[in-house]
Image 1 (cartoon, rainbow, N blue to C red):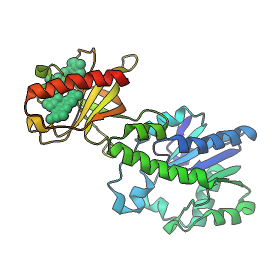
Image 2 (image 1 turned 45 degrees about the horizontal axis):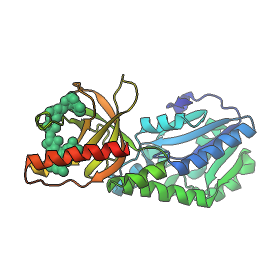
Image 3 (image 1 turned 60 degrees about the horizontal axis):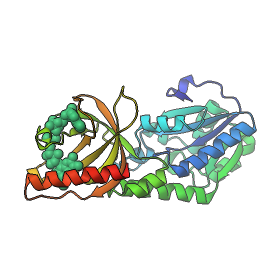
Image 4 (image 1 turned 180 degrees about the vertical axis):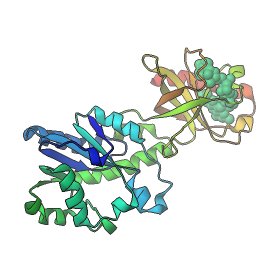
Length: 309
Ligand SMILES: Cc1cc2nc3c(=O)[nH]c(=O)nc-3n(C[C@H](O)[C@H](O)[C@H](O)COP(=O)(O)O)c2cc1C
Ligand SMILES: Nc1ncnc2c1ncn2[C@@H]1O[C@H](COP(=O)(O)OP(=O)(O)O)[C@@H](O)[C@H]1O
């Protein structure tokens, strides 16, 4: 998959089959559309092209959802799309100027001039241009003039996509990884840099890598204890572990922390960025009466984690 970030330097696409969207999460619903895209491209011996926007249009257009958390960062979206056999990913900086183009200008100067699409695959509810005035009807009306074919994404696929994206975000926030991972079709993951904590973990017998999630847009699971897999750069395979997210009421914690104890592991990894795959929710965070009681429970958490990993 070729990645293009500069609209001025796009190649001449051959029989481009184009779809447009943010594809946050690249979940099962998105994959249906991408399958339609790659199938169609193959049929006409053309190239499949995804046009995506970054930052997320909803952030630029509706300031009210500035707090919107994304299931995947741009880099993660790229990684997930790479596995799906798409030829080109074009990343457009979704600025106010871009968003404010008149629909016909957007169509002529952007879609047609840059891509010369053979086929545009789009949902019936797709909107574009200033005040979202451009719609499917306009694409239909200008089909002959600009000589492209239009292919509609079935309504049930679209409905499923928006329901899934919302459901995945809500599920992650309440720690319901069974639902989130099922809808995603893969195990939800995030990355964080290992930072220094209070150095209590080692004393308790469970050293924990405290994680700082760099990307502020990235969604992180709700408070609780989870069974996880961990990927450390430069090391083969996934390691097993358990994660705690929360305020650590037992030790009078004030800040929300994300920490992971990795099983059968004993290395200093401060400063490294590790990836955590969140497999399953185990329990809520609890304020224990003593450290001993907490350590005992953490021992049980380990047993429970190993049972599901
Ligand atoms: C699997 C696991 C479960 C945990 N559960 C709780 C909990 O229920 N309540 C709590 O206050 N802290 C919980 N903690 C957090 C511990 O209090 C924390 O690991 C300890 O304070 C060490 O912190 P440090 O890494 O900053 O030294 C848990 C930690 C782990 C690894
Ligand atoms: N099994 C392990 N799981 C997680 N971190 C480990 C493990 N073994 C060693 N470490 C290292 O020890 C650190 C955690 O020790 P801990 O006493 O909890 O300190 P801190 O409070 O700074 O997190 C981790 O950041 C990591 O560098």
